[in-house]
Length: 91
Image (tube, rainbow, N blue to C red):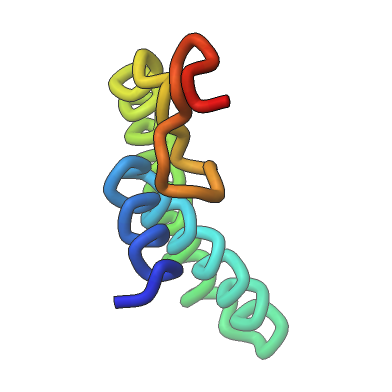
């Protein structure tokens, strides 16, 4: 497994709502296409699903924010997999 897929896997594991938010954004893009080709009834039906998925994703992100907020030594956005040394011991 390469490093990129490991980082993505860890990102989605620590950010529970990211998958719902990403899915809802993709669904909103598809809704724009459906509206442009004249499928407004389908777009209206799916817009409720996209909005609900977005709300679930935001709620899960808030849960993750409170769960992982005390783990400041390791950030999900860090470019390396190493934990920084405390008190300058790694210099």
